[in-house]
Length: 281
Image (cartoon, rainbow, N blue to C red; front, side):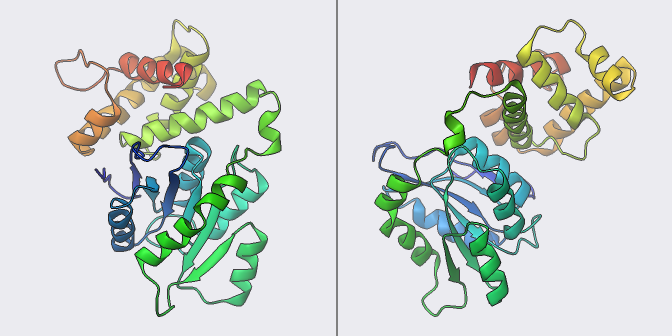
């Protein structure tokens, strides 16, 4: 079942299991046209050899999802006017800092600039499909990837050479931070909220070590009082619980809420996600 969250679109789905995960081709859609996303998702839902792992219309969120989910393939729109960023910026981010597993990147675009196409290829795009083609459709895009499924899984399923190197503490912090950002996005914690960065830092710190007074530590880092840090974090959580669809909250936040208000306390929220990050949940 698709789980829609307010723009920027960011959707997570469970992969099919009955076809065997080693055979199923995982796909991430980066597209700002809701109808196009729906058509592709609807077609994929009828198939057993491919699985949709997520949808977003924002290139920054797409980068986080790629590094966290390691999809086999990406269907990438170059122009993300209704979301955020653009396809070329995502390609450059992946080119400059490759994920642990580089996906096969299929570009779909209304842009017909030869220079843009050349830039996309230089930055790592594997194939470009023009949306102006007479036979272009959601089904044709997915079927193109299905035809390459075995080749993609053979050649693109390998992890990048750097992934075999020991992970430094700084690299682990960056990886955990990306995961935390994804988790906050899932429950609708806005990046614009004052408490967003405080929550990110607090969860990361709590996942690493027991810290008696997290608000004090975070406050010292940002030159804020303990109470202002705690208030900003609680407001960010409360706002998310007011605006995010209840089905999404029940799906992505499964801890028991002790508060009679039906909203997690700052401590509950931080340590729920710290436990998930620490244990890879």
